Structures are given as C-alpha cells and as structure tokens.
Length: 125
Image (cartoon, rainbow, N blue to C red):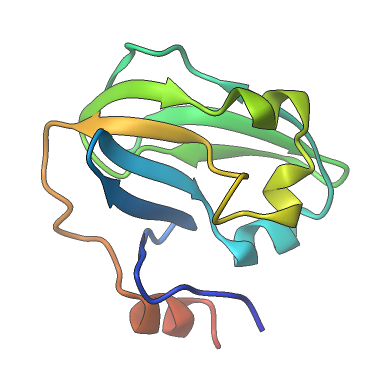
C-alpha cells in the first residue's frame, strides 16, 4: 500500500500539494514514485516561470520511463529543489519530504484537489 499523508492534498495526475507560508510545495506521490521505479534524473522549469494549471513544472526520468510533473494551479514557480537534481533518488526515498519538486506561488484556487481518502480511492487502495 502507498503512503498517503492525511494533511496533504492530491491531484488526479499524482502530485501532492502542501500549503506553506511561501506558497504551495509540490511533489509526486508515493504511488507515482513506485510506478516510475528508480528515478535517475529530474529537470525543472525555471524559477519565476508563470504557470497555468496543468503546465509542466518538471520532467522526471526513471529507469522505466520519462514522466511530467504538472502544476496544480495557476501561479509562478517560486523555488525548485536543487538537492533532487543532485540526488534524484530522494524522490524514491522520501517523496513527501526531501524529494519535493517545486514551490508555486499560486494565483488561483485549489478547488479540485483531492483529500487523502479520495486519492486512495483513485489509486484503488
């Protein structure tokens, strides 16, 4: 079973969202990292990039595939996690901690994010 922390919100495309004082921290879920298998490379969009909901914020390469990480909201990239670029295995080891991807300063609402129970249903757990 995948780890799905109650305090986070989730997207249907398997990102997690945590509201913080400087914006929304975004990463991929435990379910998503398990599906990708071993992450070997992460490439981010630039800090300051304006986003529309659904825009790509990062590309993740694993031994199995290449996948995109999407913005859950309109906004701007306020920060990226450089330690994931240096050590992409952090995405697999700690997807909700050191394996986060970006902080987005939102300019929209998070109206369609899922609560933990709804995300568990989405992934069949």
